[in-house]
Image 1 (spheres, rainbow, N blue to C red):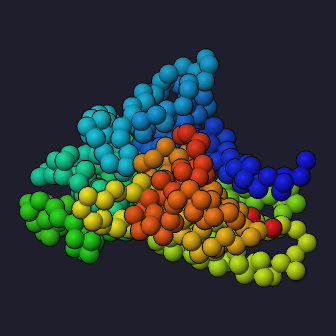
Image 2 (cartoon, rainbow, N blue to C red):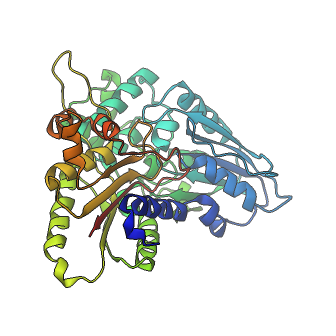
Image 3 (spheres, rainbow, N blue to C red):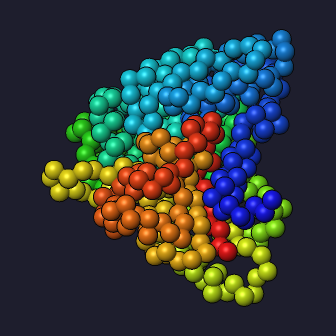
Amino acid sequence: MNPIADPRALLERLFRVAVRRAQPSETLAAHLPPAPKGRTLVLGAGKAAGAMAHALEAAWPEGAPMSGLVVTRYGHTPPRPKGLPERIEIMEASHPVPDEASRIAAVRTHAMTRGLCEDDLVVCLISGGGSALLTLPVAGLDLADKQRINRELLESGADIREMNCVRKHLSRLKGGQLAAACWPAQVVTLAISDVPGDDVSVIASGPTVEDATSCRDALGILARYSIAVPEAVHAALAEGKLETPKPGDKRFARNSVHLIATPHESLLAAAEEARRLGMETRILSDDIEGESREVGKVHAALARYALRDGNSRTSPLLLLSGGETTVTVRSQPAGSLRGRGGRAGEFCMGLAHALQGEPGVWALAADTDGIDGVEDNAGAFVMPDTIARGRGAGLTLADHLERNDAYGYFSALGDLFVTGPTHTNVNDFRALLIL
């Protein structure tokens, strides 16, 4: 069977290959430390935390004691493998905006660090989403404040580094503070990267990694995006009282970090599969940032160039990219419907709008965790007839772009890509097939 005969099915196949490469069950065991003389405590947070906990339980030596707690997003705990003993408790909480369960999980996590000694080992399982799932606000900031600040950051167009800089300085666990609380125990962090450049200090706001950002940086970001914090918290930031542990802090001398899955590795897996199926394949980058719709326009330009250059190719061309784009939510007139959607859908709208029905280009953009923003889809498909079918359904793509309403547009066309939770998270996956 010719895989190119069904471009949509082919793109989905490549997405699933990329996601499979990032599964903790495939990668975690190779990075485990030896069992310690003392006790082993497991702590963690993120959309992949449940799957990481299961993988750790399966790989840990029989008879070696282990206990702990991790927190993942609601609905993201995978089924427990048959016969696997439960040694790590899995809690669920809200993402991307924290809730009371996020706070309770953080309080319990912090309490578990008490009494650790040099003979103990703390294994921290960290993946994207941990910033919201593990929320322990600084003094003067309550949960409602954190929820508002989170929402405003998410809608501001701030990139992930800016958002997490603020989050670190408004938390008692982020920005290395969880690892500092574990001192003098050994801390081994096993992380799945969902951030451009695989900067471990940014993944889940770096709870086990020294933080080079400052209170001054956080204040600058808050001012840049006009986000208010309570007066007492603003004063504490201005005075440097909410500073995080910095590089060189002795409490990190026995710590190590291992990336068990990255966006680049997942894109390589998809590229290898595409080449095996006879396609010329190019990975553009695994750390593309910027406004989602604008990144879509750039990909459209690359696709058009590839089409013009098609005479020099003897096989279909696949363009792959990853990273973490942003969406600036536009203000809407009073009484108008607010749009729904996330980064992947916004990218697809920008791509389709720029392509204007260009023949020979099919695309899929999706978040590898299976959730685009806060919706139930992972992303969406773009095809040569996307705009024409939209017009036939009475839809105007420009209007949906103005309202950030990717979900409404692609849902009406039957072009949402729905996977359910994938139990991992290596961020955006984008694939353009050019025939």
